[in-house]
Length: 282
Image: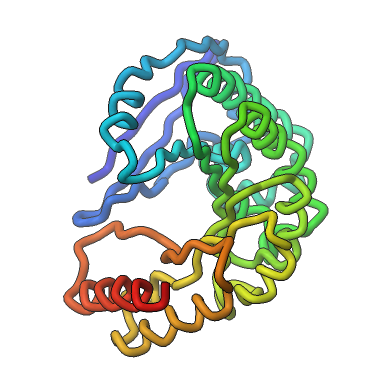
């Protein structure tokens, strides 16, 4: 299924195309909205107006949830909002060839997110706000200097808004976090997922726990690809290892991703073994 949407600017129309594969619960960008620097300038000229959302449905859902779970609101990283508009390859190219324009786009996204975030926090949203996507600025895609520039420079102020409102900051960051985990701790991030093991990641749970120093709760680190492909007895061993490495506190056992398609019989078996083993190890 392919769909197209248009953004009308004062000086022209920008077009993007998205696709959804049958049986998959995710959207793929087939044609990015911004294809040139001129397109980016057109988008930046679009006047913005914030219309406060109706949060009655959210609060009703949170009340129904009660003590059966914890409410989480997801906020996309300003960096990811821009990379989605460009396509990731062009985004990486622009970090070298169009850095000033790229920062204007990220800054504009940050400002709009901050306005909306401040509103929902004042209304009492929480207790957890989850930010996603800063793995796009970690190795091997970007250097530590670029992480500081694009994540600490533009996303960390949003984390501070959440902390200042007395709510919990959860950051989702795939891949290699060895070079940035200390920055999360220093920024008072409280939850980090999925802390992937090598070779997908570059840090073990035991090392991540040591560097977190009790200030950062780690979430992970069973790879979704393992749940899809390995045998149940292998999943049991991976869960036992994760529990042993993470220690008795500041760890939430979880998979590295969510289901986006119909589960296979093997995946169902592995999820069952995952749950039973984690309950036994608790």
